[in-house]
Length: 217
Length: 83
Image (cartoon, rainbow over all chains, first blue to last red; front, side, top):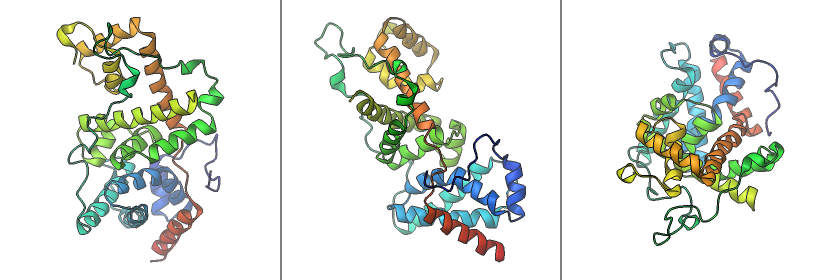
């Protein structure tokens, strides 16, 4: 949207191996393609370690230089994107230690009691059907696709993600924005599958609630 | 989670939905949840909303870079190439 429109639709995406060959040969377009694919995830991961967006941008810039310097040594034992994010993690962790910041993901961050849906949407313990809906969620499948997947809805989802705690933001960005598998996320962030699911659950629940506010008014 | 294998409430369903969609629920809990969905339209719509949310987030796209970021990184690239 703020890009230069280099992502051409209808053209099959370049495979990782092609990109690697071209990047090693110093092809600038290959580098740009990689940046477009992975920058958002890198930034979200960096944000879990450092305080400010500016600091995260610096980490990611250093990581790109690390990628370029290390590209000849990359052996393809992990996927390229997992390797790239491991470089972000190393640089960010070093910096976090220097800033005396705690390293994230060692435990699930605060808000563990947070409910997926506001408890007042459910009937109370004295009701004949405790824990059942007071009022059903709406049937979004009956909404026209141009509303459900419209620009304003997507923008509302983006805003909701930006407001999430950093670890949740990183996981939902990797899984649902960039299409990483849960195995890749666990490997890149060095978290357990259970921890990954808790973070994903909180993130998706918050985004759903934001879309509900947006769509149902 | 479910008491004595009886049933689960809607309030429990909304906390299990991610594990369910990730196919990470133990079989007995998955069976209870599916049983619940058989008679609860509200929860069917909730699961639908969750799937729709995943789809909407999937449309955000990763390639949104500011011109400043792009220029900064291209400078990194060109400096690296020259060295």
